[in-house]
Image 1 (tube, helix red, strand yellow):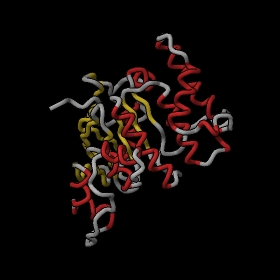
Image 2 (cartoon, one colour):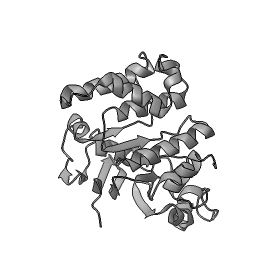
Image 3 (tube, helix red, strand yellow):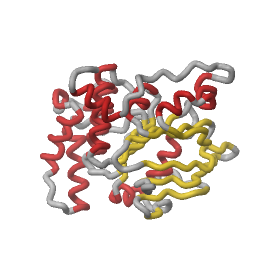
Image 4 (tube, one colour):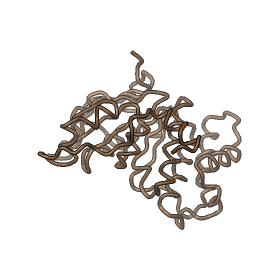
Amino acid sequence: MAVPLLSVEGVSVRFGGLMAVDTVDLGADAGHVTGLIGPNGAGKTTLFNVITGLQEPDGGRVVLDGKDITRARTHRRARMGLARTFQRLEVFGSLTSRENVLVAAEIRKRWSRDGSNPAQIAEALIDRVGVRHVAEERVDALPTGLARLVELARALASRPRVLLLDEPGSGLDSQETEAFGELLVELAGEGLAILLVEHDVELVMRVCRLIHVLDFGRKIAMGTPEEIQADPVVQAAYLGEGDTPELEAPPAAGPVEEAREVKAGRR
């Protein structure tokens, strides 16, 4: 069995008397989108903060490509290949879309000294995420959905190996969400490990190979989209005890097949 590129092992976080994350294990594999879902307050963003170094855990460890990075500083983790977006949008509002992406590309070149061309990287990413038409607009003037795409492009400009996305679908309309899902599958297909926190369950079911479910800080389920859909414990967490309707999701086509259908115009 392949070792995940990113592993969270027994991580716990306590805020006073509240156990926000309780001995959680999960992994994210290169080449796949992995889902992390759960009701509000389940501990998803706290876990992201632990992974990226913004929150020190009370127990457990974070491992990236076999190296324990639990005590590594945030910028070191970024240079090792971690990048993220935020639930609360974090962009340089006074800069244009292009400038937001260019800043990240220039910073990466500065420490990597890899001879890359930041301007070329920025232009390619602007096209890839679909914000060419707002490249010259200030990000604080953009609709939330477009600003989130700029934030994604900025994260990709650091050329990560693991990408953590916290509610990236928020603010996207149905057409944008469909295109965004296809983009995630394409990025994973190029070898990126993506860990996706998202309340749009249909999107999660469509693009993820494996899904972890948190509730009150504990992991209550892990499985394929089909298994998570049918899990009564997950249903209770989302809908309340006694409710049994299945989580809404598209037909059980895999993410690669889904992307192909989108490209062929059948979705």
